[in-house]
Length: 354
Image (cartoon, rainbow, N blue to C red; front, side, top):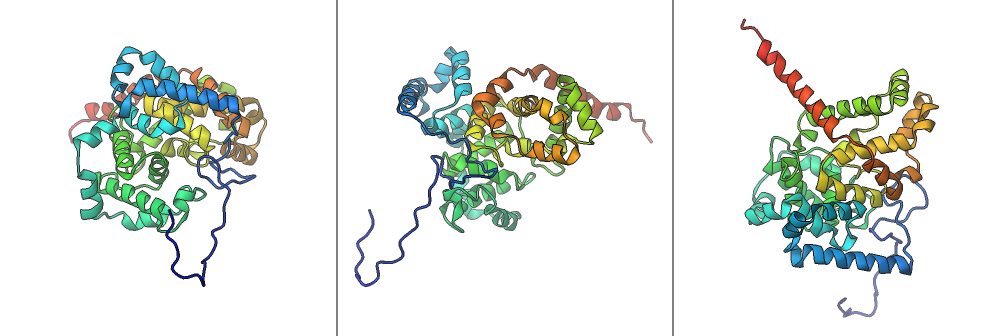
């Protein structure tokens, strides 16, 4: 409740009511903003959503107490439900459960507070400079030095101290920002740790290390997959001198949380946390496959614009994700990784002493 004013002379400024969507983004009629595809729900959809939430609550138990048991008993049910989308009201908790970050939090009491309050980071100025660029159209992050920006600073600063080899890279802001919309600072920090250090899936800290080695690996693998699965498009890219680093880097660095419809990004993140980075490959390939015929007709400049501005129907999760799930990449990615590891180790094995 607001406190009553002691003086009647000055009622103070009346705050403007700014229309926002159900995720907290300022409503915009046009533009490539993350809040697109926030669909209006009918009463029948609300009823369906309530039934879905009830199923999920039974599955995870109070505070997640039944989660591990359910996953062991019915892994295929869990996978199917995650792919259909985690209910938004439970998303933060489920993300922590499927990522392994809840266990990290419980095993490291007090560590986050120590990192935020008592440690200093060489990246502090870089973090401060970049904070206002993270989800600038979301009400939580809009106010300069407001609670959202302070929380984002604390999480990024804490991680830059926790892992000084990685420190801070700009793309990390969108990942931390996305997490903060669904959980507390400390929970977001440990989920960031779980992702980068590989609590459940392969570590992805190489996306942010000096030289971005994992980004380079993923882009090379993605290029090979495009050429194998869509040879005509791969050839067209070669003719127009297009490579994945020119359009797909942010897909991997921010896991589609940067300038992608927010509702779609959330659905991708549900699967990403449960199944790993292969969903980024699948979604990227699905985007190209959906627009395949149109992309083949475009010269360089128009092609670059199209690859950075996909049509809305292509990014609708109900269209995009079923197509992505139909694309099988796991075995091929593992083969590529093994080939890459052999190529790296071979020079060291064959090198002759000087």
